[in-house]
Length: 94
Picture 1 (cartoon, rainbow, N blue to C red):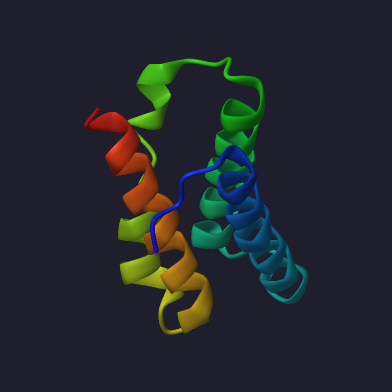
Picture 2 (tube, rainbow, N blue to C red; picture 1 turned 90 degrees about the vertical axis):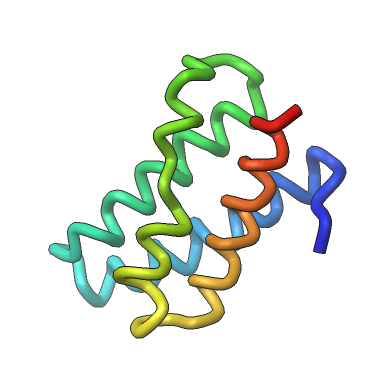
């Protein structure tokens, strides 16, 4: 699915962020979940405000974390993270 509108991007990020927070309530020491939560929080702020270091967007590795750590925990969340990463990659290639 191609994400075009700003609202769709924000909604997708918020959906993933909420699922990550749900998992963190159960596993508060999970480092991968903490990293994903941090990246999603930064990304949401960047998308909403348009401010922040654009170089940092290239360091976001949601797909790598999804493949290595999240798929076995929550496949649907992993799919959402892949979708977010695909959207980021499309933005960066423009």
